[in-house]
Image (tube, rainbow over all chains, first blue to last red; front, top):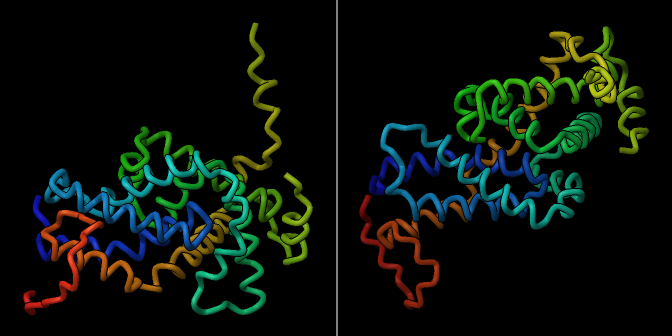
Amino acid sequence: MPLTDSLRNDILAAVPSLRAFAISLSGNADRADDLVQETLLRALANIDSFQPGSNLPAWLFTILRNLFRSDYRKRRREVEDAEGNYAKTLKTQPSQNAHLEFEEFRTALDKLPQDQREALILVGASGFSYEDAASICGCAVGTIKSRVNRARSKLAALLYVDGAEDFGPDETVRAVIGGSGG
Amino acid sequence: MKDLKSQATRSTTPGKGGLTPEIQSRIGHQLRAMYDDVVRQGVPDRFAELIKKLDAQGATPQVENDGGSNDNNNGRD
């Protein structure tokens, strides 16, 4: 369909969550914004292939995810440098404690396999249904569900030891993060 | 006969079924907090301008447009 005013506004409205998704995937704010820019360029260049009435955010997320995938293979190493850059994207610095907890979470998230990480983010943060997430990732709904479950289990194991009865004080969490060499 | 168990036990991930609701909600909360921090930043000017520019070119992205100053904004919208 042609680029109408309302379609353009809808695309703009999706930009904040596209950025959040891109940063969650790449862990790097600058790269994330480049990804978003490329996504917008592609989307507008291919706007004729967008089906009116279908899910615009899902369409845009699919483009971004595919771009990230092809880009990721080329530059796998840079991803390791993620956490420091991520903090810079925050306009308001959280308090010291919250910030620490945040870094720990971010570090744990980065340890997940990419398939699991993107599934968890799409469903748990972006708020897509399992069906939409499956279509964005080009896989079956059951696959998404199991990736999300595995992602949660792994995060729990990394952050809260065992998914155990008590999630302990911060020292425990720090010890786990600091002590897991790989 | 195949021993599937030996494969399964190679994974040391603990507590697969032991994900308590508390842990689940804590993970969900942190995930959204991280994500929403970025969402709240809104649309950076860079992207708003990009869309506007492309829009002015008739939705045909021509990033390399060697035309000079082309800012006649006719106030359409």
